[in-house]
Structure formats: structure tokens, C-alpha cells
Length: 322
Image 1 (cartoon, rainbow, N blue to C red):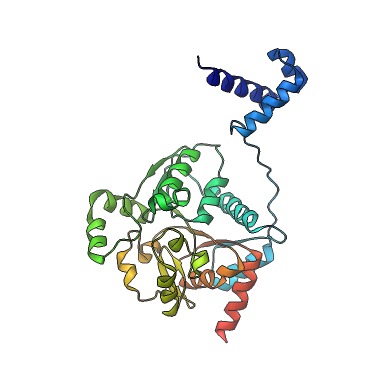
Image 2 (cartoon, rainbow, N blue to C red):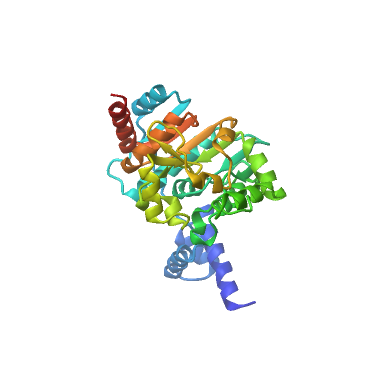
């Protein structure tokens, strides 16, 4: 047996004794036949090699009053607002994902269909799910993929990971999110595998979605290479403030008339209306116009956001209603 494989087995054994059986390092040293200092080094190596992952789970602080205000103001079923004060942007994103996963898990049932988009917020959400009770769910992509440009936030990878974590199955949408012409998009939508995946997505019991921004530094479509910064600036000049399922909305929540919408491979917004529960996760003050547009569109049932975004959304709502 190769030396590396023997050492990996030792690392796993020592880690199990320490983390699962709660033996002391001294007891492990006697059991394995090494010194206590060697046990310490083995545990450190197990963490470094990824055999052991240490996660610190702190209770998520929320702002229920802000959630109630958003719920009542925009006719939502639920709104959950993270108290993100004092956290770094990365920590806020991670906590938003944990809060979204916590809420989404409440709805999981056997034999349900779960629609999943892509993006950084959904990546954080999928990351926050943990193995537990297995659900016979089918996870299906609601939007075409972004390929190798940013694979860790791609819907293909997220759908696979979420299905495996939940003990369910996944179905890919074998097509890019945006293509060169409307004719290509129309032809792809008629391709059997693509058509079947889209039809399944339209019947989702629960859909998890992000909310896109027209600010180039925040746009997943720019990061994915589907739009250039200048193209997105031109989209913003048309009156768009954000996107939902790739369709750009103005501040009133109306869909903008844009040629690029005809080139999208993914469920259309009218199909989104038939989904039983749409949960959107989006945060940060800078995304407030996009979140407000998504809320006013009427496509969302549940919103997970942070307090900075919530305050700004309510302020913008007041400003634009005057």
C-alpha cells in the first residue's frame, strides 16, 4: 500500500478518535502507539489536508421588526433580515446563505421539485446546507449555465452539490445562460433535454433565486463574461436597476424591453408565477434598487436580506413613491 495512503488512513483514524469518540490526545497516543505531540501534529495535518473541516456556527442574529415591515410593505409571505452590523462583506454573505438555507430547509419534503439559479448568494446558501435527513427531492437548474468562467457559482455545480447534500437527484439544464442570437436561443429551447429541464423547472415547489445588479462590480453576468461593463451600463441607461432570472427590471418592478431577454435560456418570468414558493436571497446596501425592483415585481414570496439592504430598500421605496 502506498505510503501516502497509509498516512491518510492514520489521519482519518486519529481524527475519528478525537472528534467523534472524544478521546483525549493522550489516550489516542496510547491507543495508536505514538507520542502525544505526534497526535497533535497529525490532527493539525488532518485539518490542513481537508480531512477535517472545522466550522464555527454562531447563532444568526436577525431583525424581526424589519422583516415584518418588509413583509407588510411588499405583500410577502415572509421576510427574514440578518443583523449584519460589524461583519465583513464576506461574513455577511456567508451568514445570508446560512439564513436562507435555514429558511429553505423548513419547506423540504419528499418528492418535491426544487428549482435553483446561480450566483454568489446561492453559492453561500448551498454551502450552508448540511447532510441530515435525506429528502427525495429533485433539484433542477432554472437558468442556463455559465461554464468554466466561474464554475463554483454555476448552477450546474450548485444543483449537483445541493442534491447530493440533501440525498436527492439533480437535473442539469444543458445550455448556456445567454447565447448570441434569439434564433439560437429558440432552437436550444426546443432541444429535448433543454425543453424537459425547463418544463420540470416550471413545476418547482420551491425555487431559490438571487437578485442581480446593474452595477458592473456587483453583476454576476459581468463576472461570468456574458455582458461587458459597457453593455451593462447601456442596460442601466434603459432604466433597469436589477435583474431577476436574468430579466432586467426598472425601479417599479416592470420588465424592461431589452433584446438580450430573447437570448436567455432559462424559465421566463411568467413561468416563475406558477412556482409555489420563490425564495430570493440578496443583500448589501448597494443592491437595494435591484431588491426593491424584485419586490415590486410580485414574483417573490420570501426574501432573505440583511439590515443595511432592508433599510435602504424601505428608504428608496419612500423616495420613489413621492
